[in-house]
Image (cartoon, rainbow, N blue to C red; front, side):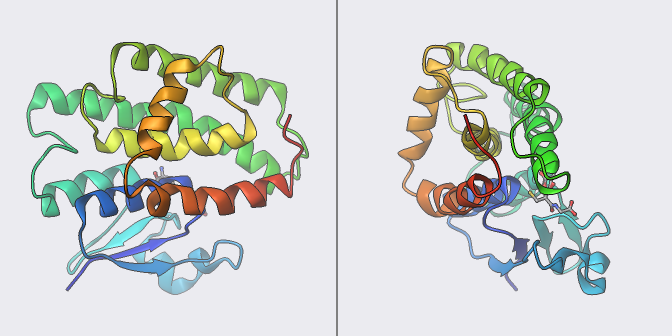
Length: 218
Ligand SMILES: N[C@@H](CCC(=O)N[C@@H](CS)C(=O)NCC(=O)O)C(=O)O
């Protein structure tokens, strides 16, 4: 039986999993979860994932959540090769570092802004929160000065996680071309992937229209 991915198209981490699925070309049943209708808080969903987050992956015998763990698992289990998540330890640890950079820095800082908007009703992005995101962009820029992709010369799941976060963050705190030329070039490389539109852009467009209806973006 194909695994099931519970997801919301507009969610950045869900889009990282969609990019992984489309890159691998694998058969995964996509089950939409409407966060606005609190479908992630139903008893049935909480049984699957007590952390009530999407994406959540359901396999025959177990359930796993957190996009970074899901994406690594999908490549290991279903990938025709290991290029998106190398088995070579010296390469893998670099990918892992970038995945933690996404979780702990980039996505965490984006999420702080999203909570201020969606839960606290902020109408603008607070300066300290924008600065903290920009500091994350600056770290990413230094990585991309040395590498074509975020973990080296080839595309990995770390690019999928970071592009879903950074393309969403760019809606709220636009990437200045004079400060972040490497990020913008990498973004264009990612946009050229044949599955980028269905993996990220379609959901990003929904995300952007929701956000722009709630905040004034400078
Ligand atoms: N680190 C997690 C973050 C997942 C996450 O925060 N998902 C949000 C949607 S973007 C969510 O499910 N929010 C609902 C909730 O936390 O109750 C991942 O990468 O999967």
